[in-house]
Image (cartoon, rainbow, N blue to C red; front, top):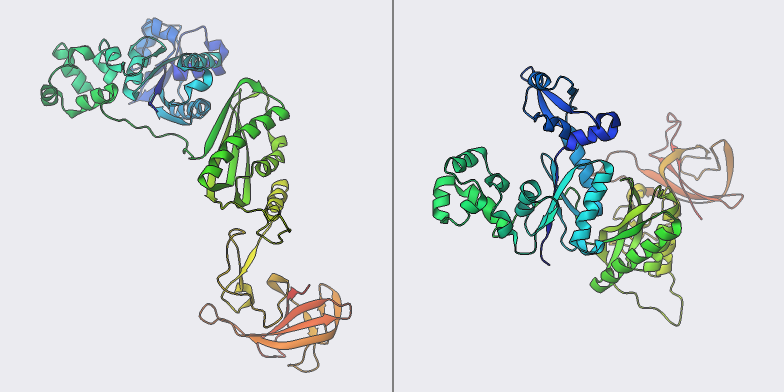
Length: 500
């Protein structure tokens, strides 16, 4: 695919922003001022002030002498950076690759995007008209290279499109400043009468290198397309992403569902072809007012089951507020995993975690209630009860050791053992009764003791003597005494778990 770039230049970025927030400034000349070495300097001027000859760099005192009615506003620190960041994120609706080009520009990699708006001409018109609706004065250009687009947007015909492989011809009549050269090189070119790019572009390269250095040749080659130039996008580019622009803003839940189904169909078709599945997915809805609504889902197993993924998203569509309408949908899949195709069993129902219906049910439960904590546990190579199991990362994770089945273990193990009061006939006998949370439990059956030594290479402490007991109501508990019996220790007994 041929690379195409769009350069956006906001000639009055900061003053346009001020006029948008303060409409009373639109009809008067005003400037933004900063303090430099104790003196106020014009840092930005609106178009009315520029018509009076007031440009950045002029002292405020001199500007007021030229134009006494000039309104002076102190500029906020970091205003340019904040505006460029905000505009760059808004431009993501036109392409996933947007880079900031300080001090007042933006570079968009629009390769493969313009056809979604009916071609580059309508694409460019749409961008310019939207910015003008918001109140920004912008000049743009589309070309094969970043350098050519940058140069023509600032020094060429307003809002122009350079045809493929024609950037060299379009650059010839532009001034040397269009190549983004240092001031010293520009001064040297001016002194030699080389005012346009065409006046030196055809000169021998050795002569240009000797007189002006390598940077001039590099910039010239980048603008023509002989050298690659790269940009850093403000947003990480996910390898699995689908975009759906809308001809008319979407305001209804039905419209959002239709857009989501179309995006899921495209992304799942691609994932199935590559043998992969979704683990995490994010739906971004770019609204007309510039705000972004977002919902996300996660799965327990890598899946490319389109209907299942749609059901997970459908549970959260009510959270999306379309306001004036959504003009762009983006489906991102930041996390994918290998997914083996599941062979259907035609003559019986499969039971267990291998059944996709089980994991899909878990996904729906989690999506319906984010506070729902669903965990799967695997045995760990430890005898100490608190360390004898671990949380599995996924339903596919396989245990490296077997569960300990030679001795009874509770189905529910308390993360922190709770102290209880116990009555026992003699120290090594099972308890006759115990008190837990104000209730007395009379024991009818007991099995034990089972002594479990603490893993001394991990931590220090007493051993435990465990008893599996059953009360008169049939409830079964896992109790233990910490260390050897000692009359001086009031809380030696603990409840650690419950049997089914």
